Amino acid sequence: MPLPYDAILATLISTIRGTVNEDWIQDFPIGAETRFNDDLELESIEFVKIADAVQSRFGTDLDIAGFLSGRSIQELIALSVGDLAQFIAA
Amino acid sequence: MARILLTVPPLTGHLNPALAVAEILAAQGHVLAWAVHAEQIGRALPAGAHVFPLDGDGGTGASALPTARGLESVRLFYEDYAFPMAAAALAPLEQAARAFRPDVMVVDHQAMAGALVARKLGLPFVSLVTTSASIQKASPMIDAWVAAQFAELQRDYLPHSFIVERPDFSPHRMIVFSIRSLAGDTRTLVDAPYLFVGPALSDFRRQVDFPWGWLDLDQRLLLVTLGTISRDSGTRFFEVIMEAVQDLQRLQVVMVAPACLANRAPAHVLVRETVPQLKLLDRAAGVICHAGHNTVCEALTRGLPMIVSPIRDDQPVIARQVIDAGAALFMRHGKVTPKVARATIETLLNTPSLAERARALGGALRQAPGAAGAAAAIAALAGAGRRAA
Image (tube, rainbow over all chains, first blue to last red; front, top):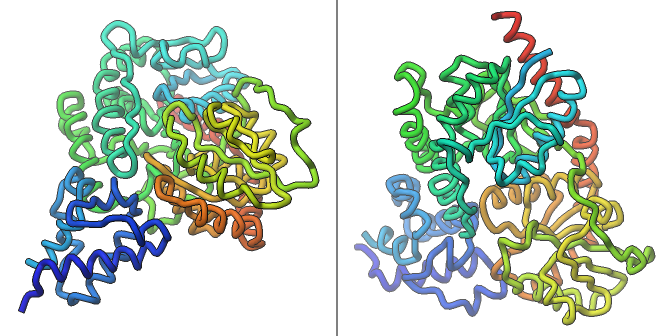
């Protein structure tokens, strides 16, 4: 049974805080609209770590590489936490 | 002696290595000409240089560099800067090449028009790679995006049979101003005939005054620079560093930062808008920088470990290379707090392995042939071309 979107979003946000693991991000407001590039200044290597953690939490049949490769560079730049949560929920 | 046509974008970090190589080639008696945006960088060329302006008749000036961060800056650099500049430069550059009749062209890797003109006219060319980021394999999505832009640039200019996926990679020589232990191995690099020559270190920068008496030889010196400050007018990062070093002992900090910060600086922090960077690096124990390719090479050449705080363009890739090589720590430019900055600076100054790795890389950088190695490869290709002709 698919997990509800809100639960996925909450888990994703705590995964991001845990992976970045710096002081500022513990209080930094993160929501569905928060963008990985502009708002969080995440490096691609950190995004991969977050994606790996999400994989192991929600199941290995998630094709995150495929999800990313289907996007244009503009979409990748604008990728938000909610975009990733929606993909996991779908 | 060979006839050599050089083309580089109007950006200091790309022009300076080319100038160092050209100085050697000219001294050897080769005949040089430059096809460049003369209004922007003509003054930086040697006196009496033979110049074909790309911003004169039929050409247009280059637009301003975008100031976005991260991947967005890379997209804007190519879509709004490098590719439009290349499209506008094709006609004047082809005219220049037909008029000058070079034996070889020397083409900065980001001056893509040069590679297309050389391919069209059947001229041998070397690519000058001034950042080890531009030869890395990227993700399939980014590779496809770059290839699509090259397809469009070539479509109306080159005969169909000449079109290749990456015309910017010279089939003859890719001269990289870095070393393999920094730039990565065959798994991470686009397949091409590389020659790693190390940095072309020569000081074309103007003389800059500095209060040398301020430095205390009994204290460690930390240099903080994010490159040309005009592109980043924000002061947050510098203010965070200032607060972070407030109580650190036995330390002096020179900060290349806006002058408005000077009156807020504690006694052991000196704020200057420009500094004689190479001379200061000779005295420094560590560096905090944006991971610009030149600053990284200059610091490593002196065996200095560093904290890298990349913002845009190739900086995140270069930063990752130095971190992976064991000579640098990461600091998140727009987010770092005084607490994390202080801990990172203390780690930088108190971790012998960082300095050891920096010294090892410095040894390799100092042994690399530099501009002389690049000049020799260019002269060899020009000679081979003329023998074949």
